Length: 489
Ligand code: GLN
Image (cartoon, rainbow, N blue to C red):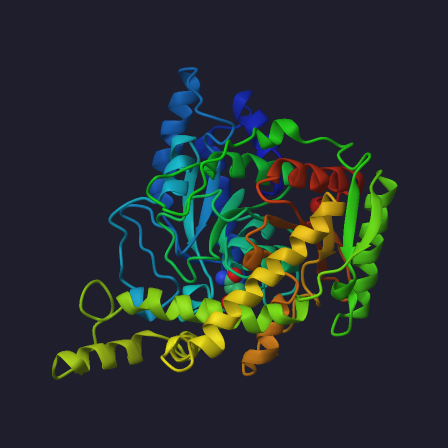
């Protein structure tokens, strides 16, 4: 067995499992060993379930031996962001509020993974309730970037990105409300996909901003991400916003010639000031490469881009203030031991259970929804959201895909932005409007800056056009292979 089995792609691991070069139990042990070797430095795992993993690996081996492999994911260990429900597993949202909460049910995307034979491996760190861009808002622990341990992994799904980047799991799931899959994927040098709103059921995803949240995969290659997405996507009557659309066989549709005869748009507003000049050059080179691969590169305009952050921080906080009202100290959450009466239970439990950023957002969200301010803020933000969506509709009349940076900088140093929420909010400037428009977007590695840190290329697709979107990314990845670089840990 190769020493670096933990750096292999799902497709490679599947071949090894099929040819009996390795068993699922041996593979599970390799990931457990890897986690034990590096996670004291990386800090991706909030908790892990070695016993359960080995037991499910044993069952996977039995299935294969009996000729009953469930899918290409059978026996593959997949990590979960700690806001995704699996029956009997803890679900903390990286918050003191839910530190001891255990899910009574399994969410749809996770159920589908289980039915495909994937093995759940660990609960991965995140910003508390998915609010943040660096993982530093986790109330439970610190996660570091595997490429440089003095830097942040991005957020909010920083643990999911770091775990894949460090070879601690073969793939993982995260959630993306304003960039939380694409931004950490970019900063950790892995592939991350945010599907079209409604493609993947949100049942069993702890809600942050329900009109923006989507579950999606992190993986070591575009093909791997396509495999995971294929298995988690699809209509679910348990999510009222789930879309009843057919799910393509994404991995089967990948083509190295995907760009031939296609038009790729580059938004002029995305290459403006505020962007690290080195990141800009690397992304521009990646765009050129897509041109060499057959795409006609054209400039497009998304004129309302600069309104995306203010609009997002009105809509997302409004929804969060409502969604987080359920954490009241009465039912399943942290309850203050200092409370005297019932009102005190609410106040003290929420004061103790929520971190600073979460409180800031609940207060902001309550304010923009309050009578007298609702029209001035919330309603206007909804109108601008429509304008942002129309910007994309107009652009997609003339192009097939949009190419852009994922993040304006490489991973920053831990502590650099944690005391300045506004500068933290700006790290999502290129990802947020994709959520506001409900479109699919992905990030894939496209080079390294001189500080040694990975840079991501963002590709934004048409609604429910994941098949083509993944195929463009695959074509670029096949030609460049940046995804095959791994951190030295
Ligand atoms: N960083 C953004 C925020 O703090 C997006 C988070 C996310 O996508 N969950 O809200």
